[in-house]
Image 1 (cartoon, rainbow, N blue to C red):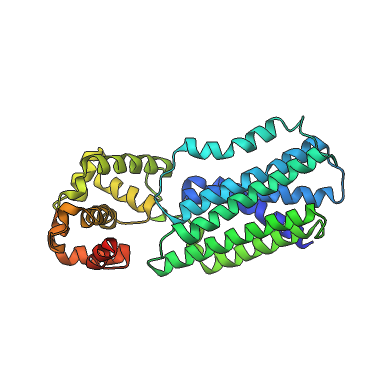
Image 2 (image 1 turned 45 degrees about the vertical axis):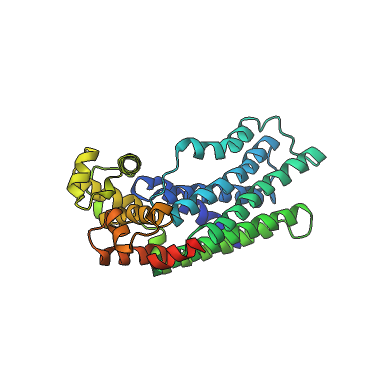
Length: 335
């Protein structure tokens, strides 16, 4: 009964997120795929426990395991680093195993043979591998949260990833006859109920991030396209080095209105214009601070060289983004 509840909630939640994808952040699209894939996989286990299923249909449901790992990875990537742009080609490559498995499901054995068992354990290891790599990235590659919202987001991603790994390990336990067959369904239901409670406590994890632009004609996909172009311009032309750079100047360079540019930055990166520019300037300052030809420059000179027009704004931005002062950063790099 509990397993059925989790399956139903996950299925409808996934469908809801996918149906409203144009109104939501990119990360929720992958959360929707994750929930749909896992609910179909668990649904098959529940149904197969009472009714026979054709081997080809069983393979299709088993193939959904190949969607879980990539969806978890991209969900965490987009949630942990709002505004990150990942090329579609890279995303599609991660889902190729799923596509191939479904296309050739009619020739893949689904019985008690050794080959069938090896294929099944391979699917589970695929989920486990993505889960472990995602956990490693969250712990060692993501920076320390700078505010309460970021801290809650990272904690949620950690718990969600760990629970995914736990579900993969339990399915391996089922495969090895170490745990009951339906235990995965029960754990999945617990995870879904946990997700539901967390959603009520921290609604910003799942609600739309573009409510303030609900009347805008600029879609989330178009906003990401503009941000990609903006990032290219910033890197190639280094417009951030201009201390007099304004939102209007930058929007003109991009060929859109200042209102649209403000929406692009806020909608995709969850930042304002000043924060966006400051991140580029701080990266430039960090680069100059470790260069030999700038080792005798004062911190104030580095600040102006990086595009800041005041030392106070530079110090504030540097401490906020790196959690240390510029002097401490230069000293640590020398050491």
